[in-house]
Length: 160
Image (cartoon, rainbow, N blue to C red; front, side, top):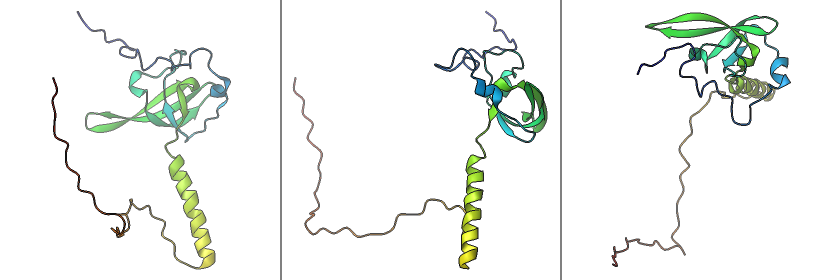
């Protein structure tokens, strides 16, 4: 038997509401403010069919370029063949949320600015770059009162 290729095919779980999140959409979804330039994540809400994104855009992150009364326009870059195409999608605000992708970066920038300010007042240089986890420091293990124990495997036994 054939396989349907409709607009919402294959979205049985993608567009389903989360566990214990069914029912009326909370008011805070509608009270969020979006501004041009905000980074938003697209997550389709199956309870609202109007202004719903195509399944391709579900889970994608884009930038707001237009804000209207009940929806936002989002720019997304889609890979088509060997290039990126800029896609402009208009979505209702039930299907978007502010992205947290820049939270760590913004926090790090603020911390670095604070550290730079403190170092300037003290007149000492400061290193602000991130570093990978360094090797653990060297140490010696004393055997005084801590004799090494030689371990051996236990013989395999079968009882029938």
